[in-house]
Length: 65
Figure 1 (cartoon, rainbow, N blue to C red):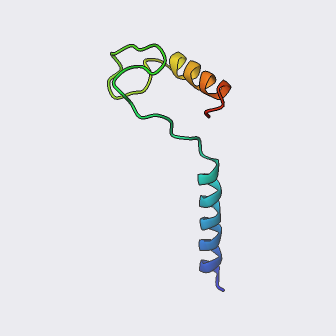
Figure 2: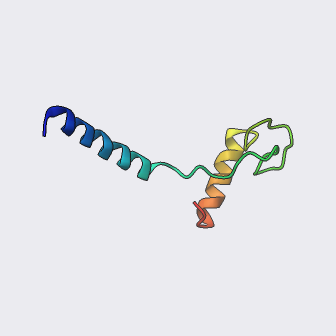
Figure 3: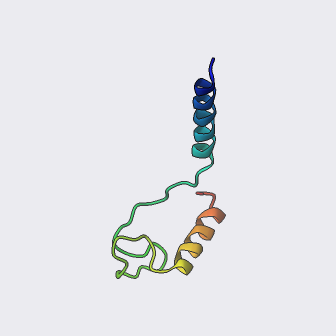
């Protein structure tokens, strides 16, 4: 095995580890804020960072995240 093969194996392993640790993607945007229901969110899931944090906290408490 040469240096290139070792590098490819290391890269593959690092990618596998990174993918296993990534956060769940969550629900898709629906045209309204998933926390407060505000309809002026465009192509986003929440209307603000506060709503996103509140939604994430609630979902974690419910065991869904």
